[in-house]
Length: 394
Image 1: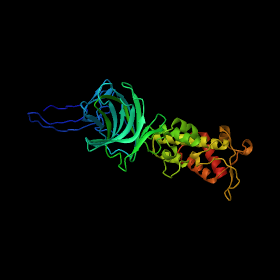
Image 2: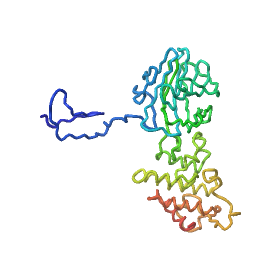
Image 3: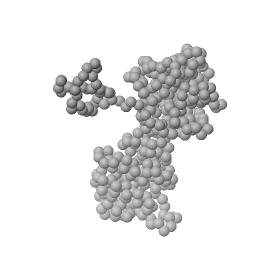
Image 4: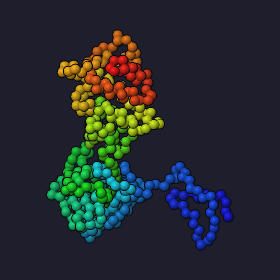
């Protein structure tokens, strides 16, 4: 017997003998940080630049596919189409974006590059086809092995041996080609057939094509304000910006509908209540504390914006946060009496404060709830703001 044997491996461990008999005792498996095996199938958000020349989640279905010089190369000849798909662990969401950079080599009788979606088998899948020899882009469908192309065609200059970065979005049964600003260039609806129950991939026909910079993300995650397929603290400042300065947010993220993505609490509206719901996503611990601090600071920004009358638009319910008392009926017209950080910090007598106009009860109820929900005020200003709200508006 050989005591105290340690085997370190990434992947499978097998204590079985080879052409021998032996006894194993006290067998244990320990995961060592830094040696974890990668997931055996792809998950979202997914990205691949082929820099490692692995392409480990790709499965060739037809044609010849291989990583080459930090790209993914596909080759087909004699009128054969080629397809390689991403092997995802889970069913794809119904709303997703699929990015790729593609290049068509000048050789080949039909130099076409494809982005493939809803792949079922070698005879049934859907495509967007980039035709380098005819300079046009068209959606289509391989139906039982027969190519069926849409009548809607986008004329486009597609020079040989030149990289082209493209994004398609899948939404239910609709596929859309987008430009860099997120605007629609071309779309096609596939008659009620959901596009997420098959596989995503790349393809070509009678050509040599190169692909790189693949990215697949879900596009309808509540709170994913920067559209990276994740909801994390990186989105916190952006959800505040979308509420306070919608014009600036829309300019920075033209392809994101803040009214939909920002509705974290599922109320059907993008409003102040979504800040609290966003912070709650992080539970307890460091992330929660950070979210609470950001949340408290956000309240200050919102109040100051309201005081100065600069916050308006759909992010705050479609009307200015500051409004005139005329026409509000029996609703009390609360008055804000603080203008800047110094006033927040003092928050004592009214001598240093001046009226800035009425705000409605609903807004200040939400403000009070949000400030009170922060477990630890970010600084003395937050506590002063809470006291001020309790004193003046509750």
